[in-house]
Amino acid sequence: TLLRTQLSGDEIIVVSNREPYIHEWQGEQTIVRRPASGLVTAVEPVMRACSGTWIAHGSGSADREFVDAHDRLMLPPGHKDYALRRIWLSDEEVRGYYNGFANEGLWPLCHMVHIRPTFRESDWETYRAVNRRFADAVVAEAHSEDPVILVQDYHFALLPAMIRERLPRATILAFWHIPWPNPESFGICPWRREILQGMLGSTILGFQTRNHSQNFIETVDRYLEARVEHEHSTISFRGETSFVESYPISIEWPGSAASADWPSPQNCRDEVFSQLGLRAGQRIILGVDRFDYTKGIIERLQAFEHLLQHNPQWIGEVSLLQIAAPTRSALADYQGLHAKVHDMVAALNARFGRAGYTPVILQNVQHDQRWLARLYRAAAVCVVSSLHDGMNLVSKEFVAARDDEQGVLILSRFTGAARELSEALLVNPYHVEDVAQAMQRALLMPADEQRERLASMRMTVQEFNVFRWAGHILSDASRWRLRERIEARV
Ligand code: F6P
Image (tube, rainbow, N blue to C red):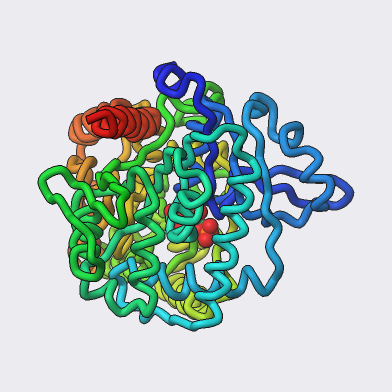
């Protein structure tokens, strides 16, 4: 309601690479699927609350004409109140813009995981051209001179300036969902100036943590002739001023309609255990990630191996269930990760497995929200061991799903979420023994300590939910607009 009041009369347009719903052919039928994406988890409830238009890259296999014609009607029940406009990209555009510049260039550039970024001139050109296509779509969709445009993530660094040129009165709020590196690291990008200039078309530039927004400000200070006012967190460049701030993203609370029909934790355990063929009384350590090298899946497996090796009482008693949702599988670094993880799982299972006991269950699939909620509620421990992560919403979803206040969260210090969820068992994912010890501690943690930790984290997620995130950015934007108007009068 607060969001609607803040936006009353404003036209809202969201731009992201991922679409919130993917339409796919399944036999003769079209089905609707939610992608595994923290961005979608966070932004979709905001759109449902505010309405407007969401422009995204159309990625499903369903017939394009059919999907375009059903941009409202094809959404699942209760989700009809915003329009989805797909941009269909050619294979060459996907290769250059998404696989190439975004995911082989910017992704490793921004995540400190020691994967070398690859920069190709042709990818950069395609990235620019695709940003231009999205800018055209924004202008075509805008019905007013001053819409509120929410540009999401590193796929669209150039979009803010491209939109600003054509809609000078728009309020452009760009949010960078992933970390922003320090100036030295960012400086290796051959197009560092162009990227910074593109982003500075925004009214507000949002990052997940203060550290990332400070890194951004220092990067601009280093590479552009811009006026940086550290005290006010503003950057003035070529007559325009942008406000740079951190807005830690979050999840919906109260949960979506789905949370109303959550079975009791015991029923979730029964359902999950029978699906997985686990013996009653066994315990699950759960990992839920996209199958990405930033998520520390290899390190998690090493830690689990260490746990079983040094605490053999858990052999036969505890299984690691790793959900690894497919993502970017056309890229060599991701294929290498798949192969390595599959080999490690096979070796671990050969070493510790026995009749009726599989130590590691790896599911390289994407589950729907309903099933994930059951997994969160059935698990004894949830482990998030990202090597570097802008925020990580799996940790917040686990906390939200545990209304029984039982279960333990192990969380990497190198996630944005660790700043808010300090009652989790915080670990350094590079330190295998540290993570193994946290697993041991989690499995032995008394129920009242679990309750205290979860109760505190639940209060945090409840209070700092995604509506608060959006409300914070939007109220800063309206304050900013007012201030500009007042200054223009002087
Ligand atoms: O939040 C980071 C992010 O890259 C989003 O932009 C994206 O939707 C999500 O992770 C999933 O990645 P992908 O869409 O490439 O599978």
